[in-house]
Image 1: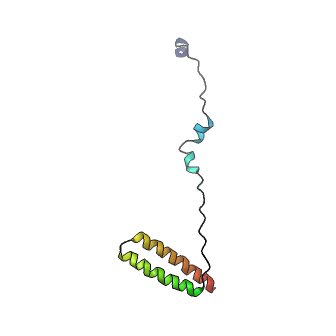
Image 2: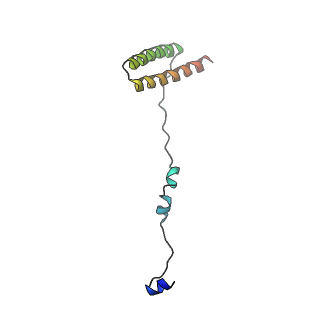
Image 3: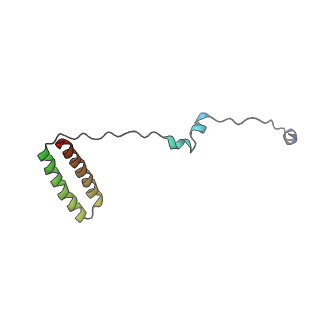
Length: 91
């Protein structure tokens, strides 16, 4: 207190705006990520599904031979989705 008197300092409380408080690194963990809608797929008959799976498997193997593994993995995921759809239609 003596230091404040000597240097003519009046203590005051710290004031921060709400943006400063909410903009901290801790609050950055609570960001809401928007959802992405899945694309709609047309109805396919069971025969069309099997044909599409065979075509995709051929394309996947060709992509793997060309060492395009990202494309091959995308095709693999599409094959899995179609196989699941085929199982649902059989149930």
